[in-house]
Length: 173
Image (cartoon, rainbow, N blue to C red; front, side):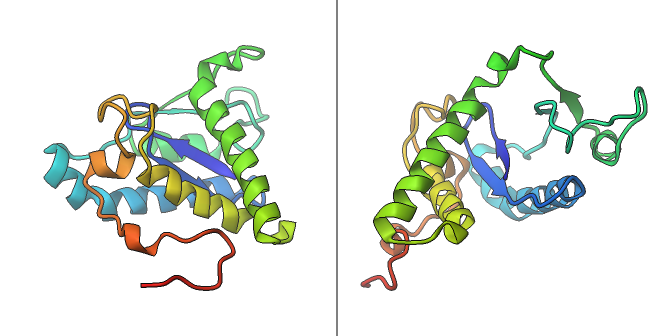
């Protein structure tokens, strides 16, 4: 899973990765999501959302193995005017927020699967369920919104009446 998290607001987006080549497609999907959410964000925050820096680990899906040449993902970032930062090897503590989120997400996914009686094949569905709930719940990761829900800070509408437990067959309206 490719995790994208906003450093200031704490908004999280998750995308499935099945191979190294998926990163470019998921980046394009993320930019589309930003485009769709842009009117809400501009109306609430009075600023157009833009991506300036992408921090990534040194996973093979993000790095090239050809020395100083750019891989496709680097080229996409360059074309979009986005800088990329990767911590030096053995210094991943600079990525603490995303590491904590990934740990919390995996723990939550395991709990949701076990409590819902679901098989591991539904792990991605549980992760997407967790992503939505994380974005609509108050969190200390939201620095700008002083702890309110990331979607609230961004002005993205949320329907709290449709919240259900994971693997629940229906909801009552």
